[in-house]
Length: 179
Image 1 (spheres, rainbow, N blue to C red):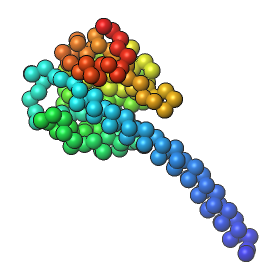
Image 2 (image 1 turned 90 degrees about the vertical axis):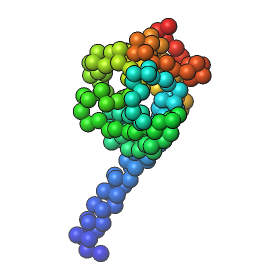
Image 3 (image 1 turned 180 degrees about the vertical axis):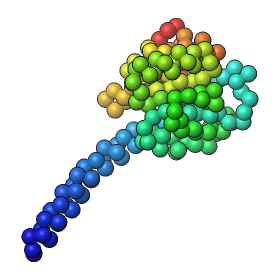
Image 4 (image 1 turned 135 degrees about the vertical axis):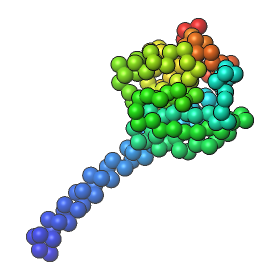
């Protein structure tokens, strides 16, 4: 084999190793996000909105997050939620929340998250998000992965301010704050 062929082969093998090194991380992340999406679907199923907020035949769940988070929610699009159908809307901008009945937030900085909570305060908009402080910062349902177990934290005072009701069956599984 010539020198140039060996160099090209080494380059191709090196690039292959580099690209494949990220594949398990992406797959693991997509798998985790898909589990969180399924959990978000069940949280929506255990939530009731006030009569004035139930105009449509769909429940629009808006997703803010990276491509992996948004892709994972396609698996729950068009699922039944009582007599309604879940409709996933991927938001690329942090506005137009009035179209949403539920909002899933992934990977936002705390200062941006705080601005969103101020903007949507007291609206009948179920907020679900990731991280240890999501519910304590003003979100409704926080999801935290601890030792491969998803813990729920529900901020009941924010839920009540928004005139939403979360089933006691779900609340039994969660750490409830803001009674």
